[in-house]
Length: 570
Image (cartoon, rainbow, N blue to C red; front, side, top):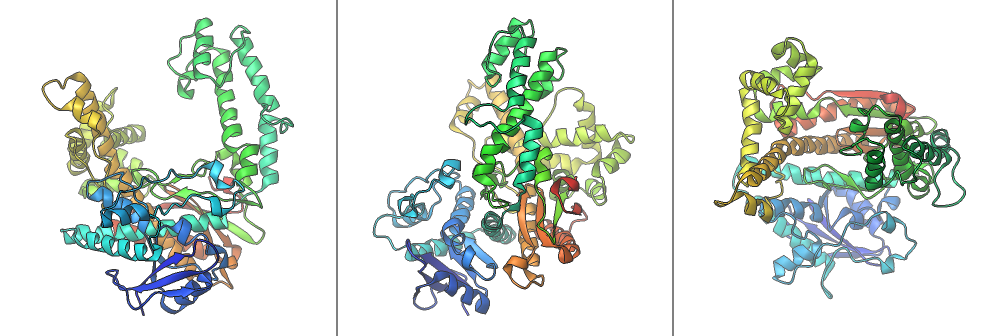
């Protein structure tokens, strides 16, 4: 039984090739050519449960999903792992495609990565014959040979990490990031249940009827634009233009620093409130309106296209579609299928708890061992004032120093010296131009050349100091946010495994993840399995805590709701 199997799909047609490997990446026997790759992969999965090795999940896994009877348990995603390794080795941002990694092995010119496909590429009607080759291999290169060679080299590089504990954590990061690729592909395949009729009704209530002429504004937006112009003197201007809005307000005697909602809400003028409402509705119309529904929410499903590790901290991004920001008011459209339910879970106060676990501050760990962390912090250090406790701890994590936060930070330094020392050390590393890493070993981007120009040498003055402090704020928060992303990835992997182990007649009847947003997950499940799914979520969160942070008293409680409609979970 081979512990790993590399695959290379045929560029056209259902066939492909498989190569058994040992855990170092060494081939075990000759490759096998098959006429039907999905069938062969399903048979090998049922027999051996290997870790599948492919160039990238979107080319190696997503095309197989519609024809697989069961989900694959594990994988090693070369593109994602290459990015992690490059950053770890001080080459952050270098091309990470299979072709780029292959070229580095062969001392060939390294091809630049193609840009991530966006909305325009998601469904343009073109045959895949004309789609760009995202593997970026040179002409004549054998894709399977490249997959095998690059995988072996990645395994060698991981094994070369000197510190055994760091090496073990990095292996966990590689496995979790690759599991994220499985989740992202499956989420796009399964889709979040979406009621187009409810969505349309909500849009109509907010914006008026759908415009019959493409490119025109809905009635309510058009009326708000007129009301706004009249409130500022009736001179026409475009409310979607930042520059024109500032000019129109200035001509009415109102000086605005920006058009941000928080600033507008402090302006005592009817036009300010009209603009706030216009911006809110315009954002919904543009990001999740009828055009969005046509492109992304067809057939009763919203199929988000996640980009695993799309943010430098390890958080996910999305290829259009607004997958990471479904407006609260539109969550009414997310409704479980008949006989099914939604299990919605989100982590409470995740980043402060991550700081407690990272720093191993005994006092803060005790504070984070129970329910509301800010309530406990207030009781211990701020005479019961929860707002001060929250403001102080968030200020410490994000590097805020202005306003009245100074005394709050002083209190935290006295009560929780290890936690405050941890973020201060990360900030100093950033200010000095260094890099920091997450708990599992995801490394932040290095300082830019502009940073070095501004902060080094005798000419470094006030501008250099500001630049250094800004980078310090970034690295201070990176260690927390990236470690929170580590935990979330481990949660996804553990939960996905548990869901796949629940009894089901087939893949269509099995609970499955349908949504992920930083610290929130949604599982679509048959109603009779909802309680088991809720228990699986809690167990997965605790497993992720142990895997990422080891023996810590810090708890990562989840707020879990079992509902028919997403809007009812909050």
